[in-house]
Length: 229
Image (tube, rainbow, N blue to C red; front, side, top):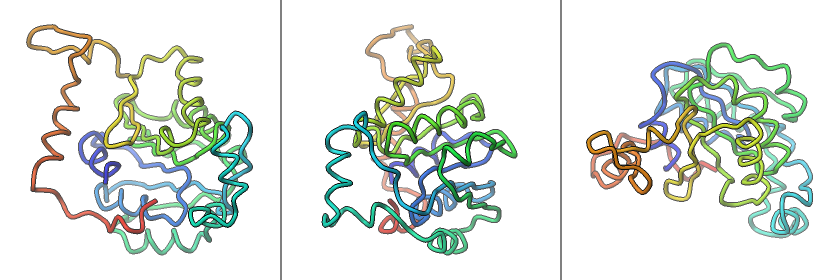
């Protein structure tokens, strides 16, 4: 639900929607409910997650080693037919599945139009780094970046900070209901209160808007969250 509310509030009016790590396609289909008249691109190996590395942290390594865990989900493997069916049931009129490991599919990918929303459910350090390296430059200024695993896996959080630092970017990292997001090109000036110029602890205006949105009893119909990863 948090992903969808952020898309509803902050997705630019034009541009395509890209998700990396779609599993069964539930979240991509849900975003199509909120942003139907867009080109949707779904990237996944459809072979599960690549092996976690030491930089991904002890929890990540333990997850992949515990194949009997109820949360293992066959290492997040799912046939592409699940995503195709989910998108076919959504209002998306234009979508494309891109099958393969990110390190193979992303280096040569050129988006058909600037990316408005980039959602990364890429779990590990290397995968998240690949996604940011090849896709962040194609996100339009003011575009929304959603990082699903930032608060879950150490490697994902490290990749985000390493990328922002390496490229000397000033995008502010925010949290909404446990979900990490940032807006491309956002900087300190936008965190100031335009009425009195206060900064520092002053919250961004759009975060206040989100609070109002969350507390409102009125919300648009959303895709069934039970199938969203």
